[in-house]
Image 1 (cartoon, one colour):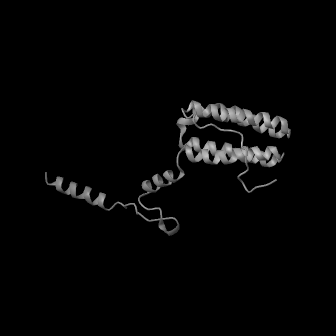
Image 2: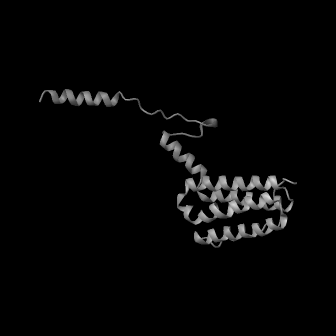
Image 3: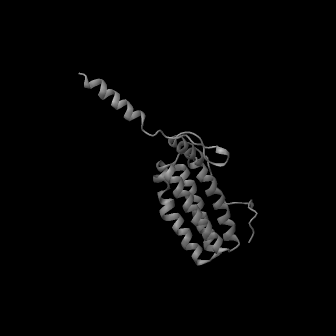
Amino acid sequence: MKKLPILLLSTFFIYACQPQEKSTAVGPEGWLEGTTEEKLDEVAHQLGGFSRTMVEVSYRYSELYWAGMDENWGYADHQVEHIIEAMEDGLKRRPVRAESSESFMEETLPMMEEIIKKENKEEFIKGFQMLTSACNACHAKEGESFIMIQTPENRTSPVRF
């Protein structure tokens, strides 16, 4: 029985002597504060969900269209690569969207890559129409058919070819 207080006291000291996680602010001007877990949660929040992915995909979609219209096939290919990267990153954050985007990722985007390799504007236009339909089909699968994608009418980017 006399050993119980010694055991409890020893356990307390062992626990108390463990290094505690420092809560050091990081980033420019220390904007990222808290424990490691809190910092990771904040970074995840800053990255956002799939809506931020769609902002980038929308930009790349428009740039892809104008690249094809200008027959700048290198820039068109560049845009498809970045659409794929943005989608992959978004799907890491929101894997629940993977099923809806499967045909888009595995069929539609590879099809666009093949069309771009042909460097044929007429084929590009047809492929781009299929891409647009695939975007809208994915939105419908996600219950967001109110987001209707259309062929860009105006250039918004300062990039010119």
